[in-house]
Image (cartoon, rainbow, N blue to C red; front, side, top):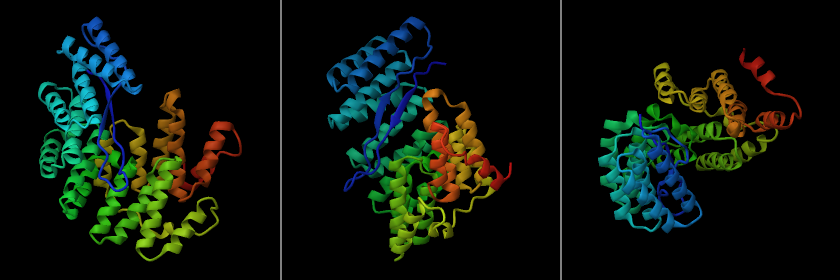
Length: 369
């Protein structure tokens, strides 16, 4: 099967503006395609184009992408080169050309991974740049209905976020909220994204659902990555949720409990979502073989034992270059169970430097082997 893997990343909400536009990035992974010499040459050109782009030499990147398109039109690499051009046009605010590149990929190529990235590129352009919100809704509904099951988790999450955003911009917060509620069971990658919790919180507040918004803040804190930016963002969401209920001092107590597990933590009294076995099975099925997502789903369901098993397996199987991130998955389970950072930090200190004691032993005594 011919496949040229790519990576899609998009930013969160910028203050005072809408969603940041999706950015399509070309992967530097080497793939095995036939004939090997042509595939290798196309991949080398893609690598060089991406390197030029990363260095800020956009004209050189554009020329190299065009070479891939002209010389290897029958390889999937040329589809990724088209998305590379779309990225350059996006930087130049040439929205018509960005949209044209995305639509050309959608019309001419067949790889699900490539098409998923092109679909997100098109939707983000419609929603964020062209502000054609109804067109974005129509495209998202049709694409997700016909192709959503074939999309990668990250791309599907981006589609759901932009789909909801289009409804919100048309002043339809109830429909925007419905998109998230219906999309989550098939899109577990949403659970790993701070932007999802921030947008869901805003929509729940718009719909007068303050209790649900506070639950969202708790879930966001529990499931966010164990890094400073993510924890700060979700801790601030907890503060906003308590403040919206006139309980700002509970936010102060929550912050005080982060480094002192003996202090009362008011977040412990906030319920987590109720997840049926059918919903859990559906979400786990959508995770595929991604242990990181499985751990997130089990945390969402409040099953700390299975979450830790998934996180430990993910850690054991992670390549050396991803070990720090994998350690963070285990630390995240401690954060979700304890609602503070104490044992997560202890685990990272022990795992990275051998200092202190390993809190995993106590964890397994608490939840049962």
